[in-house]
Length: 66
Image (cartoon, rainbow, N blue to C red; front, side):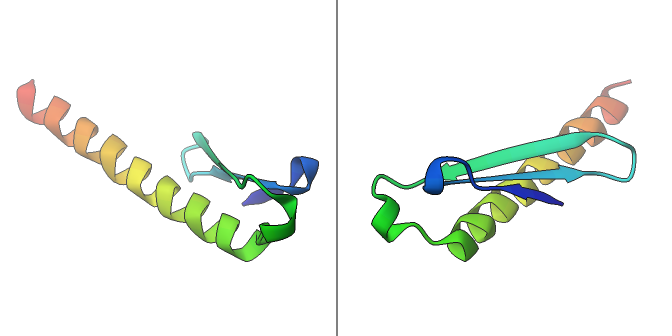
């Protein structure tokens, strides 16, 4: 997992899956004073997990349709 923090109020998380596919997510707050890195990472990771489930569901549905 790679984590970037551009502009002091944005969190970007990139995850490389076992098959080499890369998923990225970002989270931005309006005020740099209220920026929380750990919360940003937590939100991004949860979004990535949801995207993986969505991709896996698509894969399974495609296999069933064949």
